[in-house]
Length: 206
Image (cartoon, rainbow, N blue to C red; front, side):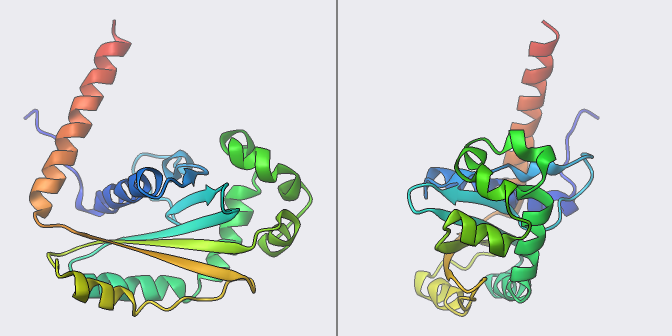
């Protein structure tokens, strides 16, 4: 009927996109590789860490976690569950993505800065030591229900405890995004996707 819909199981991708925009535009962190590049099928989900960023200024690696939930309380619980085995997840992320030769040409500035350390190490712990990484950042993004009270939001985010990773300093960055009208949000994204799709198709057919 000419309409376009976003499947409910893909809403998390919208959250991940907003997360990446905030990290790039607000925090001025640099993206290592967009997770969408790791997809091999448009209907698949990319498991593991939700974002990979770095800060050249602070010599800081950032592995982010994104949740879209009904309430902030639910999002906090989901984040806590994810962080409970995060060190293992980071080890897997390094092995499967950062040290993967298939992605070497897609990592750009990261390869320029850390390529030598990657080439001579087999684990993230050895990489951290070789590259001189002194801290790991974990941005946490929760897009949630309509809680808008700043104090309550900060109190709930403060319940997420900092965890030690590989024996070095770990910094948590808490980002809360109240979704006042989820239907309107999804409709706006759907409209933008449709417009971009039509634009690219028109350009390709010229």
